[in-house]
Image (cartoon, rainbow, N blue to C red; front, side, top):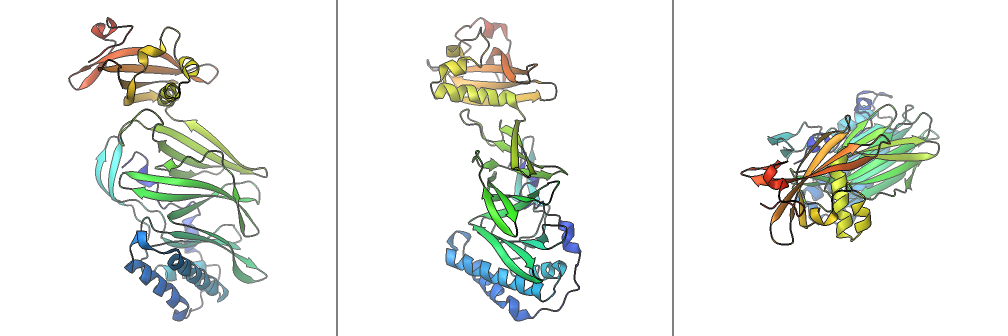
Amino acid sequence: MSRFCASTLFRFALTIAVLASSVVRATPLRAQNWRAVDRALSQMIDSQADSVAPKQASQLWVAFDAAIVGGLNAHASLDSINRILSRRPGFRGPSPGQATVHLPNATFWRELPRDAPNYFVAAVDTASATLLAIVQTPFTNGPSHLSVIQKQGGIWQQTSAFSSHIQISAYRIPTRDTNMFLTTLETWTRADGSESQVKLWRLTRGRLSRLSRSDTTQFQDADVQQTDTALVIDVSQFPKQVSACTMCTRLAFTYTFTASTRGVQEHRESLNPWALLVDSLYSMTAARKNVAAKALLPRQVTLNSVTGKDPEFVADSGDIRIGDGFADISVNAWFGCTRYWRFRSARQPSGVWRIVAVRPGRWNGDSVIFDDPAAKRRLPNGPCS
């Protein structure tokens, strides 16, 4: 259930069109090459997703890798191997998903969209000499495995791999040279959305080398787009300090990953900085960093007037292109009543966003009224409903 989950899960930036091309005419493969795979899959399907033993998953990965490498060395094409994979037990192909309820800020899904199969082999490079095989178990949140398979001296062999207890998706970061960098997301699907761990990799001579990231925050409801020059991931994070329900205000960001001979560069941009500023304000006050928190407010607004217990987003709106937005907050005042505040923020000529005005509000039936004369008369202590 999220603004972003409509196209987030099981998408692979590795071009699916590769699957339709046959670099070598397929040679019939012996059925027994896949019997070990089918046995391992059937045993896993008979189990529960949370009861799959590491040894059981490892046996499946070994069987899958051996069958795929064996097929390639028998001169089977990618198209042939993917057709064989589609006939394995528990195979799930691409799906547009099944939505049950659409709300302004969220969508409930019976089945989330899936842009690629759960058993999948694709070429990483234009020469089709390096392949990526991704195997996800039949369970939505079950373990998964990624293998790198490379042709060396005319022989295909597995050169690198890693596994996860949850679902892996992989994306190549565009580069203007022959360097290869990948981003992987290991995603756990919740009833109301998803959360993903992001990893960066350099792929050299068929070997995966993990690259460090300073930001280890899990991505909520990641939506991945690939351009000619970058990998772009939109996420909607839960605020750190200000409470927000699933369908309420989130902190929205765009992460842009670019690659060069120096490695991978990562840039984060807030898509609703007016909400991020307010969350930062209350995070600082919670950490007793009052000087830093006061610096976020206009001079005429005291820190004591806007602080309180259990801050919660009421609403937010703005236009990042224009450079203006607001976030509405409710707080429980120390003397037992609820205060409402509208924090208006604007982008400065320097490009930095600042809170430029704070206005009181009051609850009126089913909404909050701001700039109300009765509310203004309650200043400087703030309005209470």
